[in-house]
Figure 1 (cartoon, helix red, strand yellow):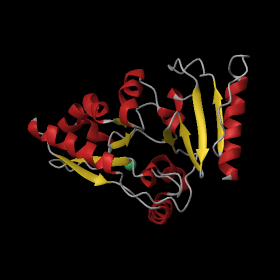
Figure 2 (cartoon, rainbow, N blue to C red; figure 1 turned 90 degrees about the horizontal axis):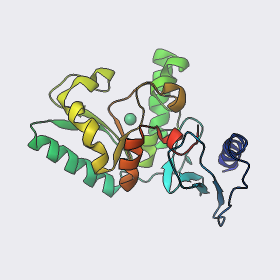
Figure 3 (cartoon, protein in one colour; figure 1 turned 180 degrees about the vertical axis):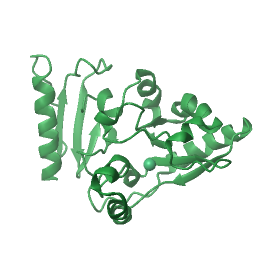
Length: 225
Ligand SMILES: [Zn+2]
């Protein structure tokens, strides 16, 4: 909790210094809430409201977890029903187009992520592992809002070349209609901290289309980078 506050305070400080001289409006505190004007590179014309509730960070109601912003160790929401509904529908609609999706990965607990991450670090070293795997408490898969998808017909699983499958070529243009965004975009590793992951979708619900159309990462969209 303290860590989250410090990180957010730090983010806000840098955001505010880089921003207009106008005093930001502070909304009612929950655990910790701060509103600031969007940065000039954000496409939002509304203020970004950052809240930390029980150790979980939200930007305008969208849960945020990344290399800097953690989740509590005991946060175990499992797969969220609206996400299951969304990808099931997307896979069904894809099947009607002759596509064959499979779910490769969904919810992961803190402990399971710790196991995975430690294995990757022993195998590839920390620097390499950090490009594709999250430290425990920093994985979007712990939110129950992220999925990894694959093409059932292809041996290409969790590889960048998934982008060349018919499944991805269809999905990239429609995922937002189901509430998903491609979270770790091509050429944005310096912002997201992750290599391009065409298979990793993050559910953001009805904000997906606006975020998709902005062409920005979640960090850029909310001015968090
Ligand atoms: Zn993933």
